[in-house]
Structures are given as structure tokens and as C-alpha cells.
Image (cartoon, rainbow, N blue to C red; front, side, top):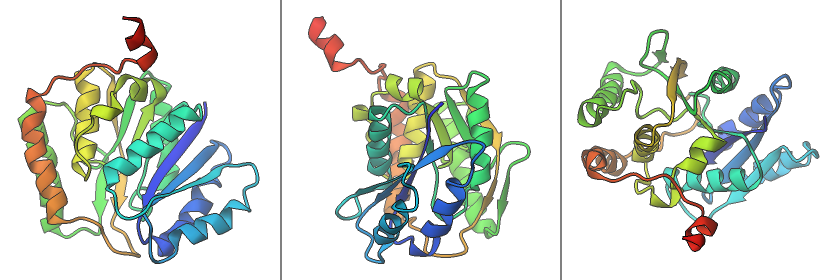
Length: 249
């Protein structure tokens, strides 16, 4: 099974080197790493390029984009790249160590038990959040509860950004039809997978607030997710049909 970890970055100079070292040191479960940098002025991409020479086996990859184009578009770019390069499991993960790289193996293990999408969950039994103020925890938990009530999707951590998708899942979802670009993207992807009948499972993780760098959350990102969720139950979701199949109809 070829496994690709996708990490979008913007001004993550303080974290990127340690993250590269940790992910690529998981020797017993070989993961490749794709960093998608949105023109970080702090030189994040320069550090990635510097470390690429240390991995001549081609396990560290970099895509540079001009400007902040959104979390969702970064992951969609990574998904398409990963599918084109024949990866079997594709992971979303933050660069700030709020998601622990060691948990990658636990997410991958669930796909061996039949899951198409595996969510690293803060809000199921065994999940924890460390170093968040109570106000932020309540907002995050409330957002996931809001999604469950609005959509009936049986996922406890709908806004989670630590996710594993199988190749089958990403080939079933029409990536061109994904509309939300901020953190609402996380909700839309899980909801689409659920509506298409893909098997979603959650595994408990400990989410730890970043120690270095600055959070990218904003009110506009929150607003897109809030109103976008209300529209989800009224949308039609169809599995992706390859263009070659379309031409034959």
C-alpha cells in the first residue's frame, strides 16, 4: 500500500523541518510526504527544498502555489496529484503537530478493516483536546454537533482535519464538484462520502494546540462552513464518472 501524507502550509517555518523528519522516519510504515505551500513569505518552501536532497528516494515532494488559495483547494490539488502518482491511501494532516504523526498508522490500520474514510476524532470515547481554552473547545464541539443535527451525518468530529482517504473513496467522490474552500471543505468531503455510501470510521486521537506559529482560522472561514452546511442536505451527490466513460455514453 503506497501512502501519501498531504500537508498544506502557509508560514510554517517553525514546524516544517520537524514534521518532515518525523513523518519520513516512520520506517515500519513507509509514508511519503507532499507539502503544498501557498507562497509562504517566511521561506517554508525553501526549507522543504533543502530537505528534498536528504531523501533521494523521492519520498518528499513539494507543490508551490502563488498566494493563499484556501485549505480546500490545497487538499484537492494534493488528492489529484496523489491519484495520478498511484497512491493507495492519502492523508490530510496539519503541519503544527496538533495531529501527531504516530497516529498515521492507526488511521491506516482502519482501512485494512474495510473503512473507506478514517477520521482522527477528538469527540469520540478516548479522544482528547489539549491546551485549548474552554471557549474554543465549546465552539469546535458545538460546530460538529451543529453539523450532525443539520445533516444527520453520523460523524462526531465533522470538522476534523486529520483524515485518511482510500483511493477508492477519492475516485468515487467528484472532486470537481466540491464547493467549499475553507474549513467547510472538511465537512463537505465527509458528508459527500457518507451520501455516496462509503464507509466512514472514527478513531480517537489527542489533538494538541500548536506550540509554534499562528493559527489560520478566521471569521470568513467559519461563516462559509456555517451556511454551507445548511445547503448540503439539499444538494444531489453522484459518484464520479471518468471522462472516458462519459464519452462512451
